[in-house]
Image: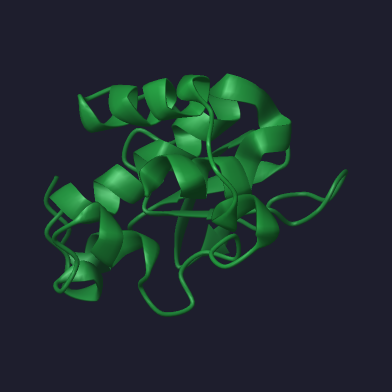
Amino acid sequence: MLAKLMQAEALGEGDDGMLLVGNVVINRVVTRCDVFKNVRTITDAVYQKNAFAGVGTDLFNQGVNARVVELARRCIEGYRAEPAYNALWFKNPGKNVNCPSKFYGNLSGRFKNHCFYNPGSDLNCIF
């Protein structure tokens, strides 16, 4: 499930982009925040209503290769990297478009076309 989402959301951004997307999904599972209180599994995170644009797309519905499965496994086993180390959201605002400083959380950084966002203190998130 995680590999399918990573492929659908960031295939064009290579292994590093897919790993960062995977970080966000895993972060949603392991953090304790009111906004993700009902998210306890990868499936919960992936299918959370309106959470990820890639769900249901052709890329999501097709099979994944062994490389993408390996990347997903790395995320599950604890791989983390900035700017998604504590990110709970990402946004692709478009090519050559600046990242908004806020999008559900505070901008932590950008990788290629994806902007990553950490939760603000108002959400009382515990990682």
